[in-house]
Image 1 (cartoon, rainbow, N blue to C red):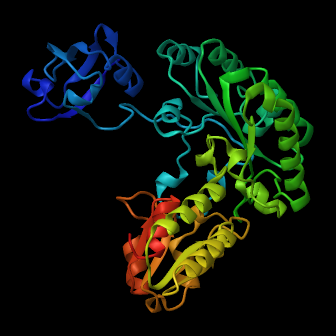
Image 2: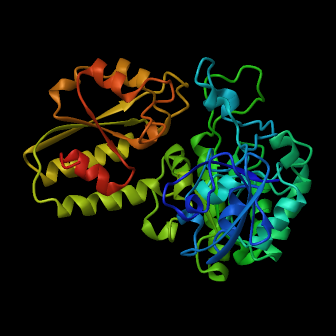
Image 3: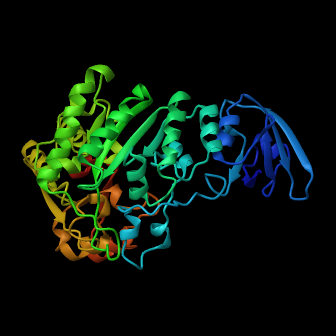
Length: 435
């Protein structure tokens, strides 16, 4: 195996050695290079011996000193992974991709389950796409943490949830990681009456037995769109059921906090919203290890935004925050804080109901341009309109999930939108016209 070089930066060590696009990188210091993990691990040596195969089939060797990273050798690859992304082989009963409406861009229907993305971008993987050799390589390289979608520690139940006959047997990889000193972040997508209650309690006890090898655990409620025809019968959580999940996790943490010196499992913000309970304070989340899973976003954003308002000397004008139903109460609270802090400022909040995916979907990250366009009136009465970046695919490619671009929405509504980066500092500055 090898990875193909797409281009080489002029003036770089590899360019000076005669390496060109089309060359195949065979090895670094005698170690075969198959993908980004091999490249970044073996390419971290300060003295490197690289072997290439040219497009003509001849070998090309070069030696170089580096700063301890592979980034200064000048090699450019077609994809970040350096080979094909691994496709999910599960048929999870709660899979969100299976609940997408037809007609969206193809990339939205791609289901990844690639452990390399766990290290590189924090993605969660189910382990069903892995072989023992993959596990051994991770242990050998000592790459931590691995982010694992557990869902259930009972093998038979996990097979049912993931729709994959390997789903139970690959739980043994958790043993291998723990023995190899690899730390793991874990998550459970909970379906009422299926993997919560006693099943969840049992799963948490089994994970706790691994001690500090489990860095954190999150529980999030299943997300259900309006497009579930022909799929497994899964229903949303009731307020009482959501409260029961919170109580179960709180009880578990009380019994285990002295042992771990921290909370072990964290309920997502959505569970507290569904239960109608007040969000926990800053101490509940420790160092916010599951923030990307929607765990603690509410509390941290409020804390950061409040602190940012205190640092801003003055603000004026009219601002509008556009958000989803789940974050609506928090945004209204922050808007009120801004209005109180700055008498010359008037901040409103527009909550968007998710007609595109269905009313059960309430998070801001799944708000579409179509729903914003239809549900907002004349936005030119505002000096600035603020949305979070989670509504868009990326900073460079500013596209909503329904393929409407931010430019198109701005043209329709005749106003420029201010996009925040998800932090309270960014939100506060956007509200105050400082972004």
